[in-house]
Amino acid sequence: MAWWSVCSAMVYLFLGAALALAHGTRNALVGITIAVCVFSVINGPLARYAVQTGLSCAALSRRMLGNVGASIATLILAATGVYYAVFEGSVLAVAMSRVIPSLSYRGAAILIALYSTPIVLGSVQRWLNRLNGALLPCYLAGLVMVALLPVLHHGYSNAWLHLEPAGGAQPFGWWPCLTTYLGVLILSMVTMDFARFGRPTDADFHALVTFGAPFYLLTFLVNGAVGIFLVASLDAQSISETAVVEASLLTLGPIAGLAWVWVTQTRINTANYLLGALNLQALTEEVVGARIPKAICAAVVGGVVLALTSFTDVFSYLLTALSYQGILVTAWVGVALSYVIGRPVTADDEPVVTAVSRPGLIAWLAGALVGFAIMMLGGPIASASVPVTLAVSVGVHKVMSWAPAMSRITSS
Image (cartoon, rainbow, N blue to C red):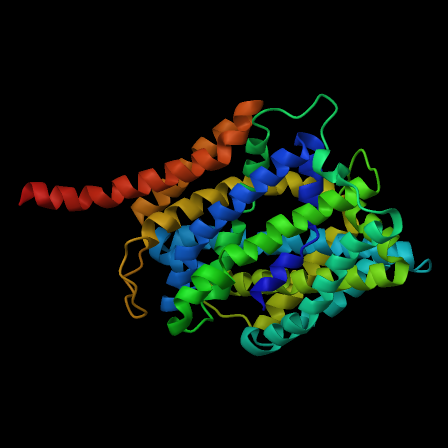
């Protein structure tokens, strides 16, 4: 349930609607469906490995990349938790300031940071599981009502299935839709941090269900379809980062709408704040050798989130930062898949960790550099940056891992 808090992020409704308006509904739904399959295939082995070994993303990074590389990967994951907490917190702050006239956006941001920070101090297995389990029915009920109320008020229309950009949908418009979702492969790193709490006897169930296709069907496809339907019902010609929230307030009414947005954002921010705090804690331990209490790390994360939410243009810088960070994350995922698949899984198989693990670090950097180069070229080719990054990092790591073995065979 703590992991499934991720499915209620408002960004997935926004993504579905934005892609339908940019590339057409059919292309958007095809791209989302392929993304569900890709994420299920990629994250299944990572979830199974984390469940059976108990390794977090930081611990796996130490094995693959050495201490130096692991510190970079941990920093990326901590920063990503902060970035997404800023995005989702900003969405809720906008909703609160719309509904409560006396509350400013900055005042709402302060309240959100004050209540979100202490929530993540409880244990994942008990407190966060129970909190998100209790809020899940509220989220699902709100999602159903957001889709159902326009039908009850205006009747059903299949116009949402025929949204297209002004120039018409392109034949292969599903490809940029797919690559947009591949840009959130950070979920693979997040998978490790949650899956490690599972029981080894439940590894197959978690790989196939908890972190598998059912999760991504709800997170990507159902949320995306509802976002498309909501925007089409309101006859919107464009969409902003907060348009889905405003549409939700209009559809459900200000009080029920705000309550639903609060549920969705509180659920997702339990994951965001937890990731930021845990990986900040791991980072300080890797860099300075001291383990800072989780409460202090959570307070630091809350302070950074509040500062970024209150004093910056959140949406303009956030998408730019995440586009570059997504390449680094994708390269890490490639190395992780190459490292995990086919490797014997034992909880006590802890190799000697060095400062730098050449195969992993070189493969990570090679994939990231190629991805950056393709992305900076711009134009249609830029959409290939994520899948090429993934392929290069997997290929380079496999070659470098096989080289020592081949050398020993040749010498013998």
